[in-house]
Amino acid sequence: YDYGLGWSVHARCRLVGRGAVLGAALLYGRYGSVAGLDRYQEDVTRELSLAERVLETSVWAGYAPPGAFVQARLAVESVDRRSEADEFTVRARERRVVTSFGLLF
Image 1 (tube, one colour):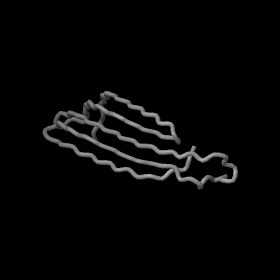
Image 2 (cartoon, helix red, strand yellow):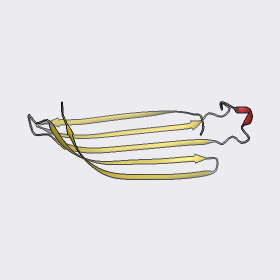
Image 3 (cartoon, one colour):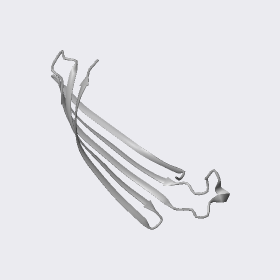
Image 4 (cartoon, helix red, strand yellow):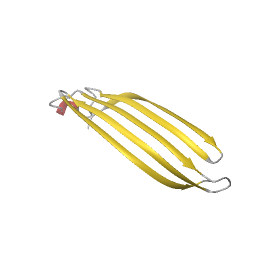
C-alpha cells in the first residue's frame, strides 16, 4: 500500500428523445505517492516513487418505449491504466461491451 494524492476530472453528457438515449462519459485521473507520510514511517526501509494514471471512457445507447418502466441499454467501455513504481512501468487496458435492462421509476 501507499499514501497517495492526486486529482481527477469526470465529464458526462447524454441526449434524450422519444424514448432513446445516447451518452458518453470520460474520467481522467493522476495520482502520486506522498513520501514520508507512512503511519509507521520509522519502520520504512525503502521509499518507492509511485504514480498512477487512469483513463476511463464509455459510450452507450438505450431505449425505453414511451410510457414503459423498463429500459434496454448497450455500452462500450474502456479502462486504461499506467502504473509506475520507481523504474518499473506497467500498462493495462480493459475493453468491455455491456448490455443491461433496468427499471425506470
